Length: 169
Length: 188
Image (cartoon, rainbow over all chains, first blue to last red; front, side, top):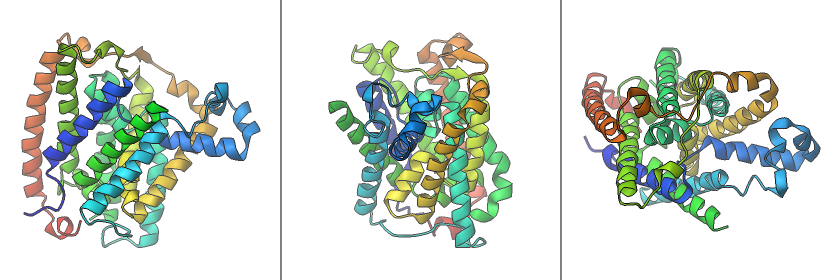
């Protein structure tokens, strides 16, 4: 069967080398949910600075006049946007599209996408990392946390897969 | 400033690799949980092993001090419960945060809603932090390494992981045939 995507083992090698670069240049792995958190922290700081200053959670990100939008993790997110776009342009995949199975309406799919994102990033804040920061980067440094988080994510997704099959099948 | 440019460049590589792998497609990612497409497993474990071997080689030649590389702290409850919440989000939304941003970059509207939901999730966590803090900090074990727990050297554990990965890849190829859905895989 012909696939328009890169061979998965080759793509995995590429991703592994990017992760290795992150380890060499920053002393830590990749991260995605952290960047989204910094975006939220800077939005809250811009809208209601006094709320941010008085909250135990937000205030630590504004210490010493730091700007949460100009931080290692948020710059990675901006890079992912650029890199994904370059790859999509390169392979002719730039297109507005709602992707879903045939048995669900666009509206329902988008509502589930929103709720799914909310769950995922909430869980990632709790576990101190998502699939990239906790599971992938964690496994690459042999941390128990990485292996446990990876098994919890995939185990849970298998457990709930039956309930949400209409989104995809 | 220099550091931020490096982060941006690494992010470009990250987003490029995710998109090339096909992780900009939610139905391709979800295929992992129904068996018709197991790219997630193949890419994920290949990447982890490449980084594992690469970092040990660089460390052997003195090009990387592994003692300075961050090892994730193990908070038992948070890792397990956080992981379960993430898995539920994965199967509902079809992405994880990194793949969601990469899919957004090529115009996937479902990914746009996913990322907006993700921002809402981060906001919700910040606002409920006082409530969730005890759980987040419970059962702290420190930055424990799995090979130390098992009493193995990093090299031996890596070898075992490579063997386990090859078995999983073989199983994954088998699953893709057994649960094959050409109607979906031709569509994505």
